[in-house]
Amino acid sequence: MQTEAYLIDLLGPYMLGMLISLAIGLMLGLEREYDKIKDEIGIAGIRTFPIATVLGFMMGSLAESFSNSFLLVGTGAFILFLGWGQIFKTKEAVLGLTTYLALITTFLLGIMVSLGLYRDAVATAVIILTLLSMKGTFRSIIQNITLAELFAFIKFAILSLLILPFLPNKDYGAGGLLNPFEIGTIVVVVSFINFFGYFLVKFVGSREGILLTAILGGLISSTAVAWDYAARSREGKGWSRAYAAGIIIASAIMFPRLILLAGIFNPAIMLPLLFPMTLLTLVCIIPAFMFIRKGSEEADTQIGLGNPLNIVNALSFALIYIIILYAVFYGNEYFGESGLFYSSLIAGLADTTAITISMAKFALTGDLQLSALVIIAATLSNTVVKLGIVFFRGSKVTSRLVTLVFGALIVIGTLYILLML
Image (cartoon, rainbow, N blue to C red; front, side):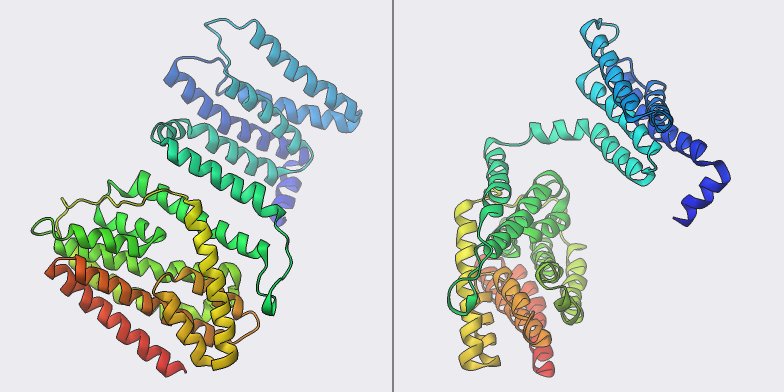
């Protein structure tokens, strides 16, 4: 606000608003001018948009001296003027619907500036500019989306926008552990992470080599990466080191992902998790980069990730989460700290996400340090599962390299837990 006050004192409120309006119009006009030259159609560009923004700013400024009805009439006249041009447009002067709406938006942004909403107007202009400039990207994505992926997006929209808001936000069951809204929120959060990660792999990772694919695949499931890469390590000579590196890197992604996931439900637990999770990540990352430098760049990097949003899997996760929630509750009630660790070791065999969320919520009223150690124990249990997958499905070289790294990971993680207890 000090910078804004300084500029107002220096230029005056009117000239400052005029310059901001002009800058907004030039930004949007530049993008439309480029699009017009590229497609060789359209009449609104680098000059029209700044004029529209300045006109909106002038209308808003004049309304302060007259009345709000002046502003309403002026806005209506501007929209009517553009609509009249649309009705009688010619082939040489085409004003597309996108440009038409962009001009109206630009005019309204000028009015926002006249009301002193400088930052809001600029932020809105940046959003509009981003949408306009990504036309080619949007078309490319839509052309590569399958019918199953489109239905998955619709399912996700229904799940998050139509079902979740209407779930009761009340506690039920023993210990008040069953809250339909909270369980639904967890399913939506996990589904979004999987959904986002799926499309990152599809549009970015699958063609960029083992390293990037492993990183992006790890956002969805490091176990899935281990399962596919272990089998592919048997397919040709010189690929074992590269695939071993991919499995290890995907597993390394698990640790920062779980920190962020736990932080969503309990930000306080991120601090006790930060050091051990960072240490375990480095134990994976450093040797993995050494392996991948000697691996083949021609190896197959495609990962079979399946459907981006499987409702049955989402409901299964909710069931696993409820079971783990009660396992943690009764384990702590009857066996104390040891019960929590038993629950985490069993839960980690199937999935680390559910136990992480359960312990993050448990830490809201329990011991933060203990909850963090239980989460670490679950990741070690899950690491054992992936080690078994690689041992039985992978080549000898891949199995040896992964065993070396995962063995060190398990030893270091176990020692950390024992030292902190």
